[in-house]
Image (tube, rainbow, N blue to C red; front, side, top):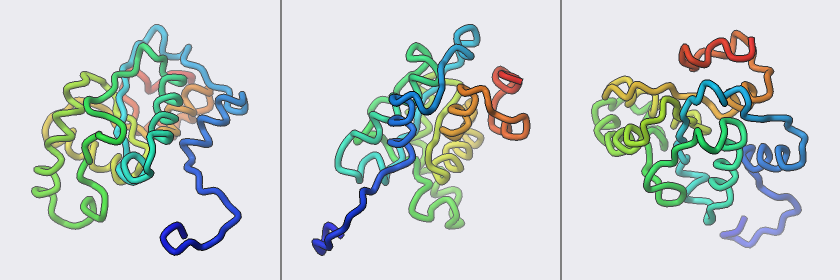
Length: 178
């Protein structure tokens, strides 16, 4: 619509921006108390389409606000580089499903090294393709981390994560809030 100057009466917004807004407004009642004693460390994979292609850092800044709010600021370890300069995981654009795992993993080695350098035990991946790729390269190259969806950690921080929704949690978090 921008390209062809098509008038519209709606705003395009991501769920990440809505999570941040709802937390700020008190509509999502989250806190990081569940992680105070555990001290589980988290990092994040900035999805390319919303991270670099959106034209601003607003979404990835909101992403960091949400993560720090739900895991504790002291338990978040950012990647270097990050935000609009973060490395692509190599799983998007059909690559994850494209049938060339050796090539995809070779491309993802840069992301693997970046994530490994954080020392975090958990990687939050708001994008489904990123989740699949980061999990795969972690297993393939020996990352030793768990990959979780953003909503999983939000639900954990709200105390509403069901026992059937804990597939991606490690043993340190598997029974939190049960």
